[in-house]
Amino acid sequence: MKKIDSLYLINSDFIAVLDDYLNRFFQQNNLPDEIYENIYLAVYETLKLIISKFNNLSNSNALKLELSYDNGNLYFEIYSNGLANIWHEIENNNDEIIESSLVLINKLTNSIKLINHDTLEIMFDVTKMQHEFEQIKNEDYQEYKILKN
Image (cartoon, rainbow, N blue to C red; front, side, top):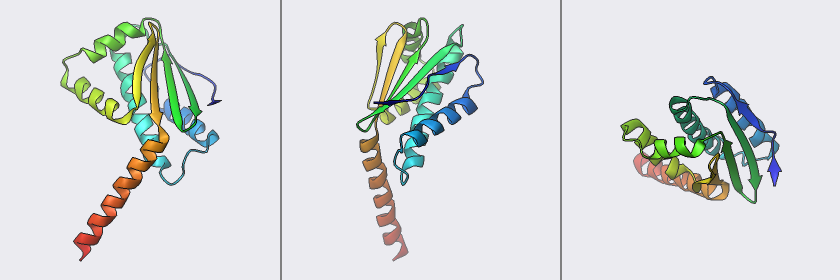
């Protein structure tokens, strides 16, 4: 299992730091170049949505993020005191924007679960994502050929 040093997010200005952190992680693990951008964006947007919702609902903005890559799976663990309560609040929120964010997160991830009261684990299957993005690319090409004729 390949890991990168933990990232500590202490304020709501996390987007540039998260982008740099993910970029270094993807480069260190030689994640697929041909579809790298799509997988990177899916992972980045998922984490950005979760962290921004957490920042909006929590009194403390202190988060710890750990990433690892093993056998085609990307694992993200987000740690914070009382994270379970905030995650349940996010899941049970009736806000339309939060609900649509959760739908997107569930589509992009393979699994998302609370490990304990302070830890949320998110797993992405890179091989599956790569296959799905290749399929979309092939479907777009077929549609292009039909439209061209």
